[in-house]
Length: 450
Ligand code: DLL
Image (cartoon, rainbow, N blue to C red):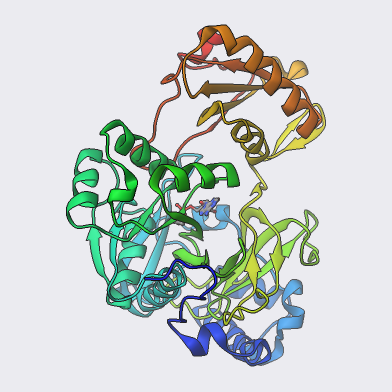
């Protein structure tokens, strides 16, 4: 495999990834019309909304008018639980995936065989962009199950012709064993589990340079450049970001490649992306907006203008790259994760950036939006130092408080806690944000620390 950023990794699907953008736009236009016809034929919720908007056939819509078409949201999927906005007979559904969701309600998504094939294609491209080839050994340490992480990467690895190690998440001792014995060159897992694995490797006295790992493909949860540096130094790899959501397909909606200059190539021949402001108007490239996806080719649960709630900026293709796809930034946050404290909007990732810019601070932290007293909402930050040193904890607390006030424009109540206090995540997504409303209590151990 190649991890030399000067040599772009070869395209897995040159027609899709490397065609001139105007040619791709024609394809998107054609696929959008087919999608609208498919939705109208299925005659479900989205057909009703299209007709209300005056659309009676795909031939009437153009990509330029997309912003005028109706959107769908997660509550629309919940309203049609458990089959979602299914657009084919149930017999055509070959599997169901989904996410447990932060608000406790699962979002289930039916896939047809054609959807699984699209998933394998986009994931193969993502892995190829990270430098993986058919000679690669890919350790998949995302969870296998309803969650799309494990299975999605698995499909892509098989499509690439690589050797897939379906480890799933957790059982860290076994992961370390396989890293040493089967010598994978690609590691796919959440960024928080990558750090967990890296720390476990160090604790076991293994030098990462003695392994064969070259690249990590990490996503499913927010992470910052600070975390990237930590993963890269703990595991001795290039760490790339992969983005996706079950509603659209799972991982592979967008992924960094070695030559994408820190942004993620969007698989926009299948998933057309827009970025909109709070009132629904498109924002220009470079301006943060909520990502809205249209699944141009999916058949099981095709979605026209799905509002993801994820906030990022969009950009054109990377200069000099054979990949001509539009790119998105790392996620800046979620529209609904945004914390509004004393009138100031704060994304948790901004707090993480401040914490991890200080090398004394470990990547295990917790942010609490404390609204127990609504009139005095407080942003609490529990930071864990790399090493326990009560003598310097107070100085660290004061410095972090100042740095956060400077960056966010709002004061945070910082607490430096003993190493090991913040729960680690072996399986699933790390939970770094807790919201506590009036009448609720902070769970232990945080209640004794405020
Ligand atoms: O997390 C799919 C996935 C699996 C992506 C493995 C990458 C790797 P869901 O469980 O449906 O799907 O959660 C989707 O997770 O709307 C984002 O808010 C968040 N998310 C996903 N990838 C990233 C990322 C999978 N790279 C939700 N950075 C999305 C930040 C991410 N947040």
